[in-house]
Amino acid sequence: CDTVKSINLPLFMFAGGAVGNLIAIIVLSVSRQQRKSSAFYTLLCGLAVTDLLGTCLASPITIANYLNPNVLLDQHVCEFQSFLLLFFGLTGLSIICTMAAERYLAICCPYTYQRWGVDRRFAQKLLLCIYISHIFFCCLPMMGMANSTLQPSETWCFIDWRKHDPVSTTYFVLYSVVSLLLILGTILLNLAVCGALLLMRQRVVQLPVTRGSVRERWRALSSAAETQMIAVLVMTSVVVLACSAPLVVRVFENCFSDEKNFKADLAAIRIASVNPILDPWIYILLRKSLFRRFLGLSRRGSSSRSSSPPLTLKHFRFVNVHISSGRNCKDIAVK
Image (tube, rainbow, N blue to C red; front, side):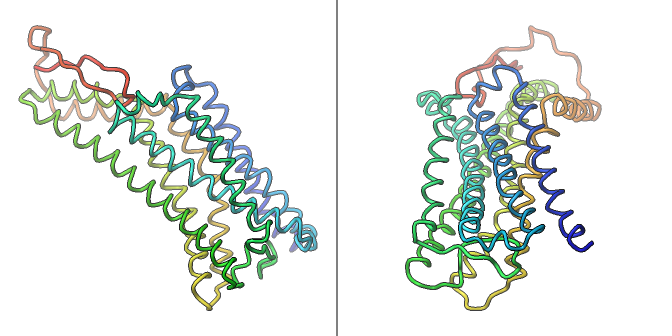
């Protein structure tokens, strides 16, 4: 009975992560062609595939260990699980940071975005580089740079942070610093993107026009597709960073502190395991059809609060405003 009860959680997490990410990949795959060909949605689909692979490779080992406690006593299995945790944790952070950088270039540096030709193929090359570099980096413990060991809870394997020899400590610190830089980079890039959009809106609103004209121009400027991209990016970033940060903190603490807290280590890895379960539901719930309905409701509410006389074509002149793809311009009416 105790075994059945204890195995329920890893089974639920495995099912939730696998089913959720499969649905997310299907939702992203049936998107319109212009969305599927964009760099942002290619990276987003890459993140969903990464989460699915991480769930399907790591969870069966955990479930098998609950059924047979001797599974992780095999050093090769232990090293493989440690590699999976290192690799998928770092890869998720890297893809999120790359998505934030893509949006930053698209909105803040549109000419650079266009000159570099950031598109689906460009994003696929980036994903390939991330995978290859991270496979090599996370294989270093198996090459002798650090040891993998069964943790005190005997339910998971990770790098042995109780060893304080110079080589092992160097790897711990390097892994932690890279993870921390990815987290800080994602936060700063997201803040820059949101700040640029707010500044863009402020400049539009400050033009000498009526409230009705301001509303029409901001509606054109903040298209549903662009706003949806930012919403998906911010929400996914919050989830990934919140789930990954505790493990990064624990690696830092175990490197530089002799005091061990095995319960905190276990809690950190469990929080990290929740990430692939939550991520796909952001893509599913914020898909374009639902997001357009939400924007429609919010715009109706703002329209009812501020009424203005109808505007005719003779009241307007047209200006070109760059939209965040860096390639297209839209004619927006200005009184």
